[in-house]
Length: 240
Image 1 (cartoon, rainbow, N blue to C red):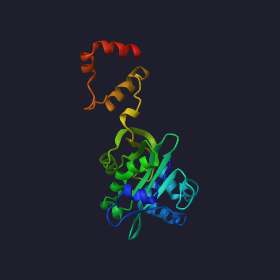
Image 2: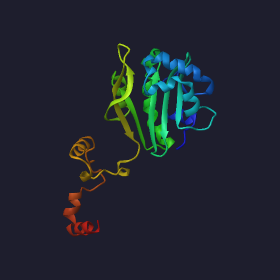
Image 3: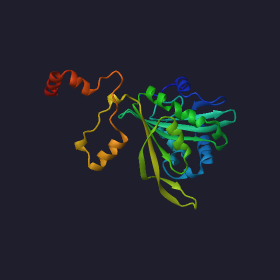
Image 4: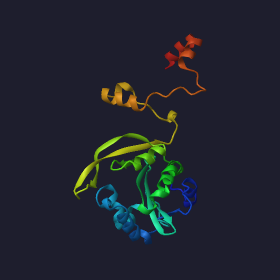
């Protein structure tokens, strides 16, 4: 897997007028950490809290002009300066892409710049070499879920207590999050599990979420093939 250039990213993720994406530089680390804390105070605990720490960026993030690493951080920039952060992590062994964080300054959330970022993620991931993209969405508010669903991501389920958040009284609680994903290859490249290898509970849920796909217009239904050539059907069965 390789990270696309900023020129490629600009093509894949066209933003509203007045906005642009920049790859994070080493000299911007302190500023973006302070901005993230300002935009999302509750991020002080949980998986996203790493974006407040300078050592996270120095040790794990692919910074502009430096050697590639598996986490990339893009800044959403406006005439007023940094107004958002868009970060994702590639998983080379699985050829997958994990959306780590997308956060926009409250003053710019009506611009729909976040929706534009999500809309271009699949093309960006494919160019990187990913065949699967996924992320977690908070259930504290619906707008993130709406944005992912509009961008074509499928809700796969919920994680009970995956992450931690600060609740209304300042107490820290483990929380449910929604798991969203998008397949970046054709259905023909996916091996469906054998029903006999699943428990009844798993089999029922799988059938509900992933029903057998309908034949393509160019495909002749299996029944029609059998009616037209019964002898060949028997021969094919023996070969299988």
